[in-house]
Length: 185
Image (cartoon, rainbow, N blue to C red; front, side, top):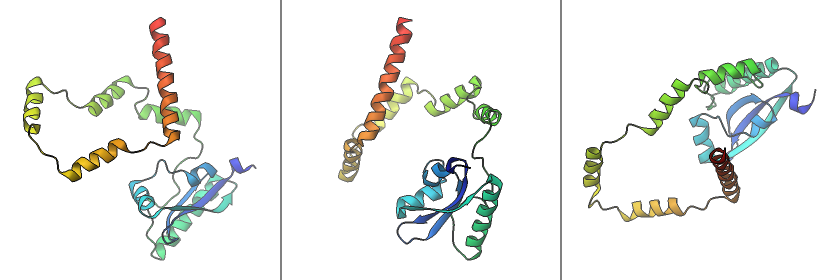
């Protein structure tokens, strides 16, 4: 068994006081991953920082799930508040192609009618010209406080990390090439 095939139980600790706040199970990439985490977990990391600690290695996913459940129960039993939303033992490390396809269908990715509804909901209801005019009148003459102006300025002038700029550039170049290809084709 290679390290990539192994399953781990891990703990996340607050950097501010080394207190455990989350117990998890996953592969090596999941231990340090900050994506797909619940809002309580994210708020804790934002406020206190994050230390990751691998606790145990297991040959099977079932063993790792059992250990995760046991650890969550133990920590909660001694009064430590965890950000875990469940008692553990859920999830999949490597879903089969069939399971991924079902998950994709359920998320609306393969059902155009669902995708369209989601898209419309995100865009919101189109505003009539009359409604736009009313909104404009309400905003006319409105004075912003210096604090609000500063926040808006800070947000606009916030430095974007070079890695993010590179990703944005790469994505824009791909989109441009795709549009160009469609227009020529």
